[in-house]
Image (tube, one colour):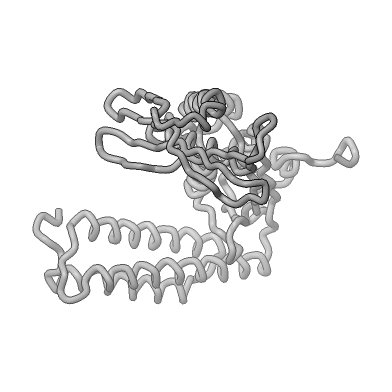
Length: 327
């Protein structure tokens, strides 16, 4: 921690530094795989005075079923032996079918020799999620011969573990959805990814309160969001400008490529898709103006890229490649 006077949060770091001397903030976060229930996320957001707009919704039961399947299957990778047995065993969960009404997986018993060579696979149980009732049923399959009876209690134990995982998965939010909340909050602050491989963001000045709230919330999860003020100097403005123009270049060329593929051989695109690209163009144009004002310099390269994207989007309209009902 250092001395008692050491700054430990953005709020402490920036105290006494006028915004006029700050171009923005640099932030990066580290998020292990936290097991957090949605109610905890909401409670911690309130305590941090953070907006709840981008918090993940309650987990879907179908997603919880997939997670329980994945976690239970992952826990069974190492073969084991029953008392006095000359062979090893392990369990696997294998998908069988998935329809609008239900999803079915089977618990499979694998028997191996001492060297790990597979000797036999036996379908031990059915696990079925009814998507209409969100109810899960488990059934031990009557496929046992005399030599397999010893494994039956182990199958029931395995099914109990699946049930426990499923109950917990219905409460917990997946780490990827927590990461999305962080990215969405940063996006609301007009943040810019300043590292080509991602993970380091520039957040323009004027977002201090929202950034402090986000930092407080992330740190309360047992994760970490580190933030530092960035001085308002010519060198830092050049860095931000270069990163911004690189970002616009990547997005514009990606969208132009997508639009080209969508309209190959005279194909028409749905109005909703055309409008989605037009909205992204409008957002990028607005964002370019904001960053141009911030660094007090025209974004020449970004402007050229946006002209190309604008021409591509509206050429599709002019060439009658948008189906009826555009508005």
